[in-house]
Each structure stands twice: as C-alpha cells, then as structure tokens.
Amino acid sequence: MSYLINNFDLVGQLFLQHLRLTLVVLFFSLIIGIPLGLGLARVKWLRGPVLSLLGIIYTIPSLSFFVLLIPIFGLGTTPAIIALTAYAQLLLVRNWLVGLTTIEPAILEAARGMGMNGWQRFWQVEFPLALPMLLAGVRLVTLSSIGIGTIAAFINAGGLGVLLFQGVITANYDKILAGAIAVSILSFSANYAIRILERRAELAIYGNSK
Amino acid sequence: MVNALTDAPSETNEKRVTQSGEIVFEGVSKSFTAESVPAVDGISFRVAAGDLVVLLGPSGCGKTTLLKMVNRLYEPSQGKIWLGGQEIHTLPINDLRRQIGYVIQQVGLFPHMTIGKNISVVPRLLGWDEDRTQERVEMLLELIGLPTTYLSRYPRQLSGGEQQRVGLARALAADPEILLMDEPFAAVDAMNRERLQGELLGLHCKLNKTILFVTHDVEEAFRLADKIIVMRAGKLVQYGTPIEIVSQPANEFIEELVDTKNILRRLSLVNVHSVLKAKENLPAETFPSKPVEKETPVLRPEDDLRSVLSLLLSSGSDPLKVVNSSGEILGSVGFTDLRNMLYSSQTTETNKCNELFD
Image 1 (cartoon, one colour):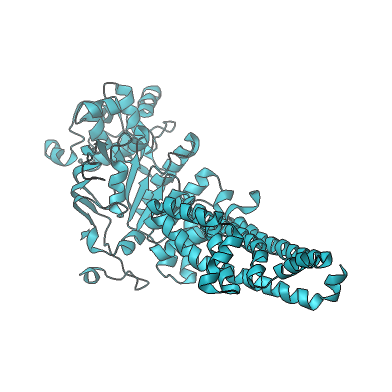
Image 2 (cartoon, each protein chain N blue to C red):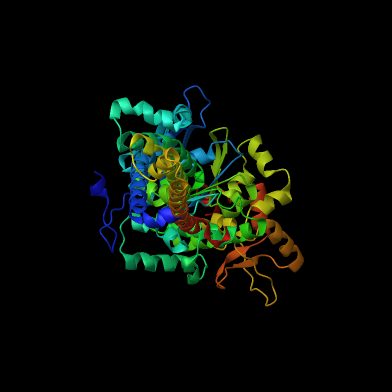
C-alpha cells in the first residue's frame, strides 16, 4: 500500500492513460459496431459469416495479436487500439444485433404502417428499444478493454499494465498490488456507471415491473 | 398532379393526398414468389366512402395480404388500387400511410412511449404544433373512453382491451378518411371483444370513416359489417350486405360458412341495423305501424334477429320499435322483415326492387 500512497501521481497518470485508451477503443468500437450491427440486422445472410469472423478474431490470444501488429504499426497505442477495437466487435455487434432483432415485429410493422420513414423508425423506435442491449455490449467492451488493456503495456501502450509488468520484473509486490487495485477500481466504477445507464434505458421500456 | 388535387383542409395547410374514403380495387393480384400460388388473385371491388366492410375468410385466404396492399406494406403484383380517386402508387408512400389509420391484432404500441406519445405519433410526423396535437390527443382519449390520467402511463400498465383502444385512438389521430383493421379484437377475451365491437360500431356511426376490417370470425363479421367480402384461396367469393350473404349465398362454401340451412343460425348472424339499412331504400311504412303499447319491449340496432324473433314471440307485438342508445326511434322490425330476409331476395336487392313496391 505504501507504494500507492508514495507514488500517487504516477499511478494517477497511468490510471488516466488507461481510461483514455479504454475510451478511445470504445469510441472506435461504436463507430464501427453500430453501423455493422445495423447492417447485419437488415441483411440476414451476412450475419453468419460476419459473426464467425468476429468470433475468430476474438479467439486470437491478446499478446500475440499485439505483437503481430507491431511490424505494421510499430510500438505504442496504435496497435493496442486496433487490437482492442477488433476484439470489441464481437461483444458489441452481437449484443446490438440481438437488441435490434428481438424487437417485436408488430411494433415495427405499426411504425411502418403509420408512415415513419427509415430514419424515423430507427431513431424513434429501433434505437431506444435496442438501447439496453447496446449498453450491455458497451459494458462488456469497456470491461474487457480495461482487462486486456493491461497487457498492452507490453507493447508500450502505457496504462496501469506498466505497474504490473514492472512489478513482476523487479519482484516488487507493492507495485503489482498498486496496479491491481487501480485496475479494479477502474473496472468496478466503469461497470457501475454503465449499469446505471442500462437500468435507465430498461426502465423506459419495461418500467418498474422488471 | 398530386398537389393540384389536394386542397388544404380548413385549419392548416397540411396536404391531404386523398379526398374521400372511397376504395377501389381493380384486378389486383399478389404473388410473393414467381412460382407460388397467388395469395390474392385478380380481385376487384369498390367500397363506398363511409362503409364498414369486413374481409371474411379462413386463415390463409389472402384477406390480410389484401388489406396490406392498401397502405402499401405489400405491393400488388398486378392491378391497381384507388383511394378517393387517386391511384395509390402516384402518392408518396409515407404521405399515403400517414393518412390511413392502421390497427393490428398485436396492437404494436411503442413500449417506451407514454400513451399520449403513442397516440400523437402521426400528428408529430405531420408536424402539427404542440397545442393542436395535445388537444387532439385528449379528444381521442375521451372518444375511446379512457381518463386523461392515462396520458402519462405506459402501454404495459394497461389491460389488453385498453391497449387496443389506444391502438384505435393512435390510428385515428390524424383524422384519416380510411381505417384498416387487421383482426384487431382477435387477441382480446370474449367479453371485452364484444364491448370493443360495440364501441367500434358507435365510433363508426359518429366518425363516418371508411373501414376495412379483416376477421376470420363469422359472428364478428356479421355483427360489424355494412358489407362483407368473403374470400377463399385468394379469390373474392361474394361481396354483399350481411342479409344478401345469408339469403343468397353465392356457393356451397358460403352456405357452409354461414350454415344457411339452419334458420336460427341465419337469424342470429344478421342484426337489426342491417335490416333497417336494407329497408332504407324501400318506400317508407311498407307495413302498418300500430301505436306501441307502453310495456312493449324495444329493439336495439345491434340485436341479432334470433333474439328479435324470440322477443316478437314472447311479447306478442309485431312489429317492434328499434330505439338507439339515446332513445331515438330508428324504425321497426317485425315478422314480415324476418320472413322477407329469409325467403325472398326482394328486401335485399333494394334498389332493383323499388319498382315492385310502387
């Protein structure tokens, strides 16, 4: 514990670095994942192939994935962001797709029959109804990015993983503990914050009964 | 072309794409794939503005497909459909849909919107201002008999019957000339169904909308319809008033459907309203009207003829007066009418028969 207290500035800096990495990954994941999921919801036959591909990417061990990207993107945050965003797609797209495809067909038919155009149907009906599932996906992506993100320190992407790697190499258990505690705090608070958003979105649809 | 024909309605400059509630089908067919048997096969008919026409037939006969071609959820493979004199394909699809009320069996209310928001979807799509929308929503809520406290509730907090009432209010929100209803009461329990049917008849009288109503329930069809279109395997088998269908079934299929050999069954299908309507075109007072004694029972327009028969027999008076809910006398029905309806086609072919009575 003494390490954490004595090096609060350093740990805080790494904490913010880790948070930033996670947010950047989340940003790119959403930019790619939302249109991709929407596309899969519309084009049924693409679902199998695309989800299998995302599944295969997800099974690549993280350390080898990072190392594989080094020749192309060098060391640093870029390969880390790319790998983490690629991992995130399976979790995000699958949840978002389930959210979109489990909307009661009658609701969509009513929306169409009342004269909503595609855009209006998406914003007024599909998006709010699939939002809880999307947020569940966002939560999974955030947690897995925080977790796998620690390994990214190995390729110079920074973050709280730095403390863990350094601690292991120098057999400094205080450092390891400090890193572990900081990562846990980040994970728990992220989980809690997104869970609140999820609850709100669910409440709007299901009310207090669920 | 479209704009030239659409005079703005009184209060706003919102464009109306259809002028009246008349619906015309001309040789309409629909096949879902090139090889398959057509779901709808060369159907032509005309629905006069303000009529409540029921599409009746067994499941898979194409009645829902037919209905969904009116608001272009399905496109016909062949033929044309006119609404109020406009061929529907000449109209922008969403403008068309916003002016046709659409009610479906599963209701399809938006679970994340309050009742108020649900009802005001189409007005908001049409860009009505806040005050006008609010006023309209409150008016509709009163029309369907729900308290204004429901405005801020969510669909899940309502019973099935209440939800379907809201579905109806939502369909009526922008005051469409035409209402399409696809088995709207099929998922509601029997008691509520009868109430909703009664309410729909009341609304129909009050609002005078053209209604196309799909059902496979023979009793429901006869209870509601001004006219019935009986369909089978994608074809129109018969189009006529309830009385015409019962007294002159086009073929064995319809005889079986309405069980025409069974006189009591036939009587139970037709209601007083239909008889009065059939008599409208006849010269008035074709039977002697005696002053009604004080204690004589009266009939309601929605009573079926079987109960009329039993009342005629038990009360000993003939004919009996028909009185609506506000106490107005609408006409009278007696043994003669029942006999006419069952045994002759004279009362049914009203227009042609006028000469016979002159």
